[in-house]
Amino acid sequence: MPTMKMGDETNSVSIDAGQTSSLIWTFSRPGTLYYACHVPGHYAAGMQGQLDVHG
Image (cartoon, rainbow, N blue to C red; front, side, top):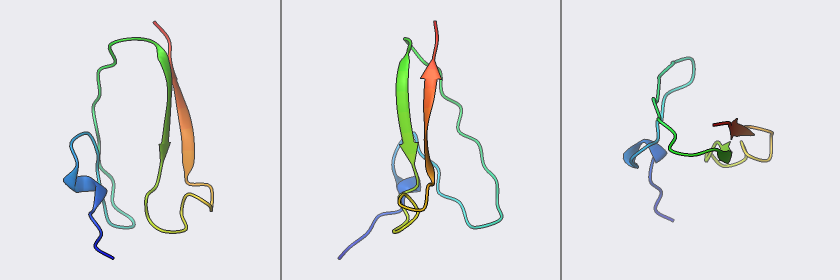
């Protein structure tokens, strides 16, 4: 099955273990956003969360 690193997508980052990176995002309205790791097994292991944006 072909795969694509999420870093190939706009508004995403893909980094190697032990590295750090930044993604700056300006929100246009309040709301709840959900995020997760797309590496197989990582989502199930808890690498996910939510971000609440308040205006």
